[in-house]
View 1 (cartoon, each protein chain N blue to C red):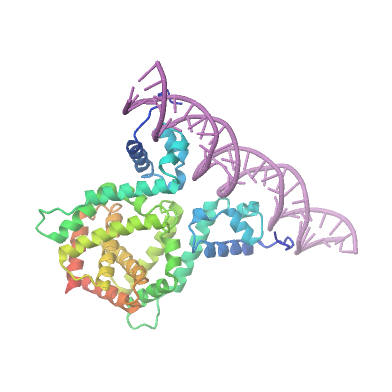
View 2: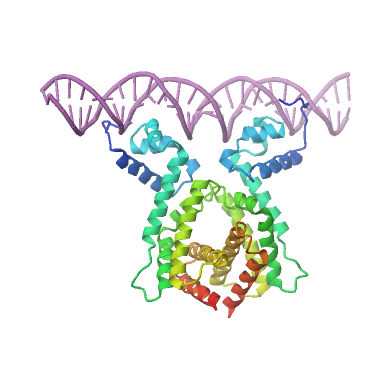
Length: 187
Length: 187
DNA sequence: AGCTCTAACTGAGCAATGCTTAGTTAGACT
DNA sequence: AGTCTAACTAAGCATTGCTCAGTTAGAGCT
């Protein structure tokens, strides 16, 4: 198979390598279609070793999705130079989906929706976005407001994804509409 | 295991039985945690027979989700007696999630989001809701309008689900907010 | 340079599960 | 009663998630 000599890596580096493989493979394939055999083969290691770092395939999957979430939150950080603090929150998120739409769907609309760990990652992402929004528009966070803002983020996400197949609608159109909507809502 | 005598059923009836089992089992369990062995055992048949009706486990899963979608569309049909045609579309949908929220999430947020057949079922549901909405408010269906209405439905769904853990917010609150939003949007 | 020792790593093997197929039999129709 | 279709079974195969007893890279010490 491989003529490579066996090589030892420090645990953190190996983990990173395996997660990186997952990020690439799971962008185009659901988790049940990716065998640990394949991951091990790409990494050039044995199946057994993968289970040393991730005791369960599910644990591996969780680690990969968590990495994808960190990547998104880092990429979609609000632009502090933007004159409109609300736009500063929405715009980079929609732009991220514009660039990585298919991957976004694979990681955040795929997978086992019922799994508590995956849900926790999604919840954490969503809460971060909601908090950024609340901070940007300065609204008091009652239960109803939170539900409203969370719903509004679902709307933004949906529009950003649908836009991928409808190039006549621009990123700016989506951002404009989203911002206008939340402003009217406050009246 | 079972002392039942072997019984022949007409294909349509057997299919219905198997799908019904799927509807019950998959309401609490993701598809990868339900083995065909278990379905067969509940139905009192052999594994092999299941594959006669559903050549693939995935085909079985698709059939079950499709049945769930039909059930939803039937239950959330607009009330023709409602004075407000937009409310008539939204209200029964939110009420359905109020009653079957966990099941709704299992069938429509669980599963493999990337599978094209499952996506087609979701798309079909969504399109139906969008068309009902377009008909209710009488708006011209440009690409942007469709994207907006689809986004708005994501918002409605999100609020209806979040409400399940926040009983201080009523079904009426969600419907009111949704209706108000779409009306302001048209201005 | 050689010795030692930790832990990164392998590979054989187990159990569960999706799927196949050669054969069996319920039960409808003569 | 006899026949015949197709609903049904059961044994078995291949894959895959996971385990574990053993191997060895390679860092630290002398």
